[in-house]
Length: 116
Image 1 (tube, rainbow, N blue to C red):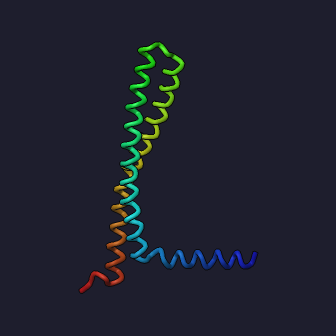
Image 2 (cartoon, rainbow, N blue to C red; image 1 turned 90 degrees about the vertical axis):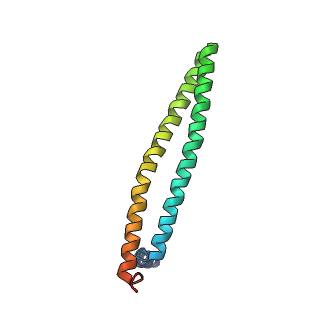
Image 3 (cartoon, one colour; image 1 turned 180 degrees about the vertical axis):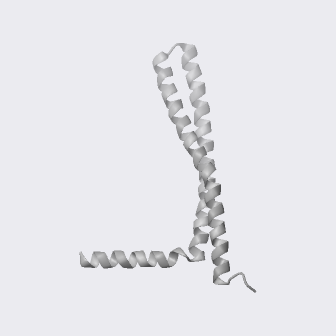
């Protein structure tokens, strides 16, 4: 137990020391850009799935399959909620990227990397 506490202390100390390092902040910024790209790709897949579900729902309604139409409507609603959540995440991502860029510029300036 004593060694576990020491390990936790040194891990937190190392994390705190690296938290202000511009290299790690730059990696966080690159991760945020990749996250935005993945969100857009996932939104495209969900939009295609929603279009497929709408077509299937209309086909089931036209053919009189009410049990299949109710299943398709539930699937459509689930996909729409997931797409709405992705859109909310996409709207929050630029603010996170902007904040990371501002912190990175400030850290570069404070450390003297920008001064000539």
